[in-house]
Image (cartoon, rainbow, N blue to C red; front, side, top):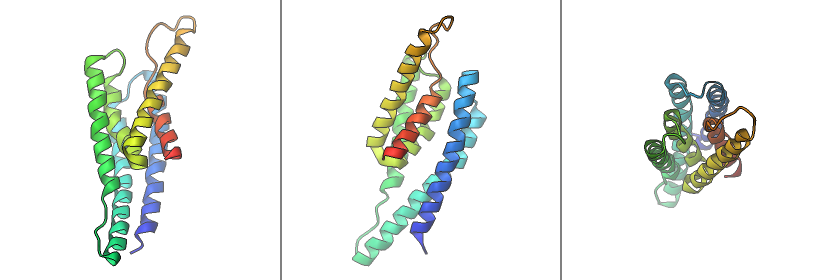
Length: 173
């Protein structure tokens, strides 16, 4: 079987799904200051299976190549997706638990998808860059809206910052 072709097709489909959902989630978050569970669930169940299947095809390609050379394939991308998703979910949950004014519950529920996408793009290095970019973007946005008259001290919507950071990470890594 042509695992490399399937891998590329599934990766493109998964990234297209994430593209559609990142725009939709960002618009909803900016307008309503909420990330509805239903929307997050749809985004996750349409994006992650495609990226997981792509990573599985990469593993199969590695296994085929290693089998020809006598070794075993590496599940690296699958493990990166899982580990980064779990790690960022725990980080966002801790931030929400101890500083709820800075990050919302919807952002915590966005973390598994965000973590899986940046983990797929480049593992822990990509996750570190993505988190830094997301929080830096939110900080700049927060400072900008504080200077506008009548805007108060409400923090900016975080989903657009996280989605933009994920796309920068995908592009760079």
